[in-house]
Image (cartoon, rainbow, N blue to C red; front, side):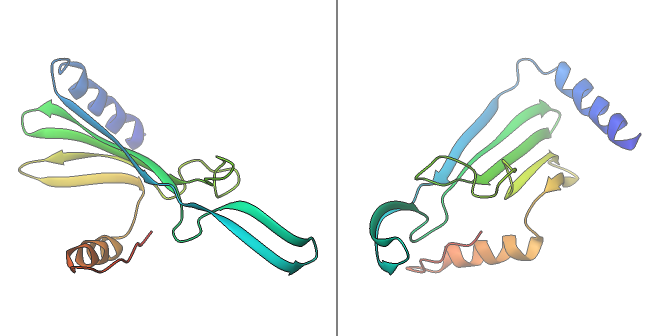
Length: 138
């Protein structure tokens, strides 16, 4: 019942904002390489392999200004195999992060869905600020 009321409130707020600006970004990492395997049960094999140095991923994130200091936000992020194009987790499309939320300039942010914990988000921000630190996380 609460989910229905929240959904209706978001739709009602968005319906009057046809003139608002939206922003959608496509992001990701595609990592593939040629791998040569020797001595396995299949003998010597040379093949294209995904995720040699980093896990490949694709994502979509965006915002929509709803007016009055309120914005809607979303993020969809999933792992993919660069050599085949399929999801890196069978039966799942956006298994890394998938959330929707509201951002208020006065009240803060509320997001619902699958997302990284605040600790992981803080660590990622800290690692990005260290010069020359090549760590990729998540």
